[in-house]
Each structure stands twice: as structure tokens, then as C-alpha cells.
Length: 122
View (cartoon, rainbow, N blue to C red):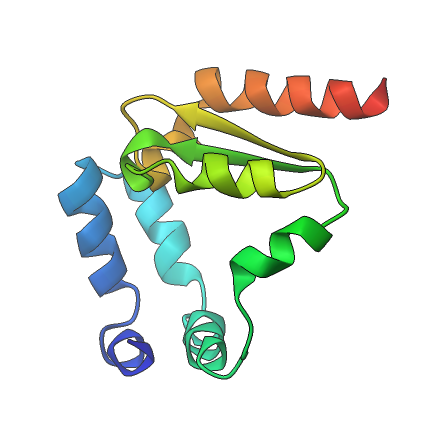
């Protein structure tokens, strides 16, 4: 996977986003393409050597965490399970959206984020 990212840059991922979600706004594509792919490559390579299971680590995450997830990017709703494994985790699922379009749906994402932050301030 890392070698593919090096070879194709962001284009392979962008193609997958478009296939899964439809149109991605041109400004978003420009921002993605302007970002260096090497951190993603390094992360992909490093995961092979971690020697631990991320699911096992969730119970130790003490920071309040909100997962804003597009329904289409997590069809099995694994992020609900992940949030429940955490001492202070929450999951908000944005219906009918994938990864990018869930992020871009300010009408769904921002109220959820604000409610989460307001709860933390209380």
C-alpha cells in the first residue's frame, strides 16, 4: 500500500473517494493534492511494526473523543464500537455521507461538534 501511495500520490485515494462519494469539490481536491503524501506513506509503513492492536488501546484513551463518521465510510458502524470501548468516547454518524462529504456537511458536522465541546465545558 505504501509503495502504491508513493507511485500514485493522492490520485489513487482521490479516485476512491470519487467512486464512493461522487463529486468532491475542486477546492477540496486542490487542498488534498497540495498536502505531502509522505506522512501517509510513513504511517502506512509504520503500522506494520507497531506490534499492538489498536482496539486493545482504546480503553486507555482518557481524552474525550468524538468520532464524526460518514455512514458510507463505516457501513459496519465500527466507530460506534470504538467509541463504546473508550472511557469518554462518542460517535456521531452522518447519514448518507462518506468520508469527505461527511466532513463537508457543515449542517450535520458542526452542531455535533459544538454539542460535544459544550458538554466538555459544562
